[in-house]
Amino acid sequence: MTSAAALADLPRQTLADWHRFVATGDQALLASLLADNIVFRSPAVHAPIPGKPATLLVLTTVTQIFENFRYARQFTAGSHDAGLEFAANVGKFELKGIDLIEFDADGKMVEFEVMIRPLKALQALAEAMGNRIGPQLMALKAAALAR
Image (cartoon, rainbow, N blue to C red; front, top):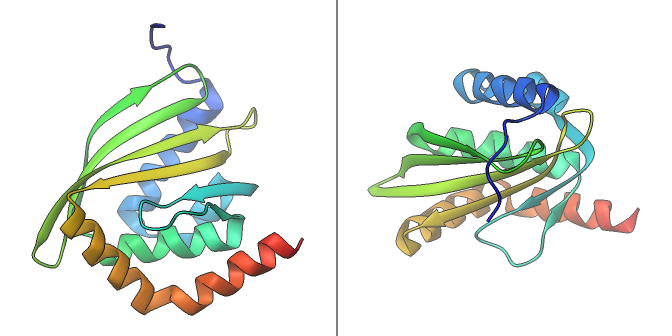
């Protein structure tokens, strides 16, 4: 097992800006944090979601669906990887989750993976997301894969 190292300066600044985005919902701020080739890994779908437009859509939508969202802990694994433990509500369900974020040398997010439990809360979130952005997200995924 390796010991955890502190995040490099640029990823640390990006993470601080990520927390500002979560607090404000500022989509322009979020866009500046994501690499063009970012890959989003959802707990609700099997295939990765490629590209900045689709990731922007997912992350801005989920922040609107989550209620009482809060981060509990932050972990680092090397100088370009972080994990953020969170809790939130989706309707009557309380959930816990982890955001696993990988940063490139410029401090941009290049991979964003989310894990959520329990299953009932994840199902409620997936249904809410599908109702709001399902067709739009499918079109963005298709466009990213066609490139």
